[in-house]
Length: 290
View (cartoon, rainbow, N blue to C red):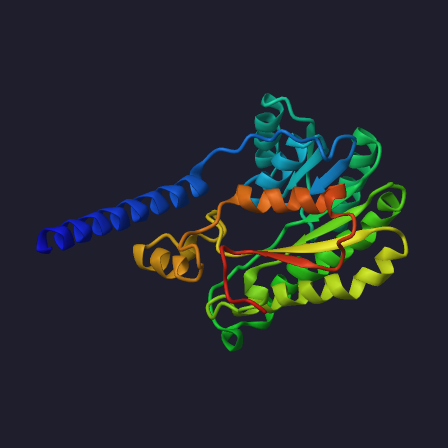
């Protein structure tokens, strides 16, 4: 009897260890496995993605193009725009690019004019540009920094929406996607004012929803969790910060830019034709809301 119990214990222990190993491998695979894009949900559509030469913006632009869209790349630096366009064109994707500092009216005007000239119109606007020039709590923020964050993150998003309307109203399936943040729901203590600006975007989406729907334009948001990009590097570059950031997610890992891009492609496609005024949280399972 004792031998049977020992054998049973060894079998159960071995099975538990095997299951743990498999689960860890699956989680690792899910985080690192390359994806093959096989659908053309956005064929014939034209998209603008701001701040799209690296990080989340670049991944969104690439995914939209992989699904058939013609994409206008934009960023503040000409060298970055050129490099991103060359990389995506080398993969056979239909893209063009232009310099655009979203805080400059002339740059925004040129962005829309070049998109119309190069691609004939506009169906999808992805507002991704954002800044966070300082790290600190809300009440330690200077007026200058407050104004800069709100000018770029909120005001310029509003202006891009407004200035895109003449083109979007001519589209058969127009869509606006605003990149907010999990910080808009659960503020980061060291990104205080940035968090407030991202909460404001959630309100902008809700406030504009009904008015845009009158013109057949859908507007939705994406709230990424902590994504492994240059922008969020302070949140994971040290071992301690990395471990703390992973603990914010039920999946115990950081997200990757491509995982945000897939959601953007869905929201821009006809698969999301009955979705507007919503923000999808992509955070690996965070306690952001019910």
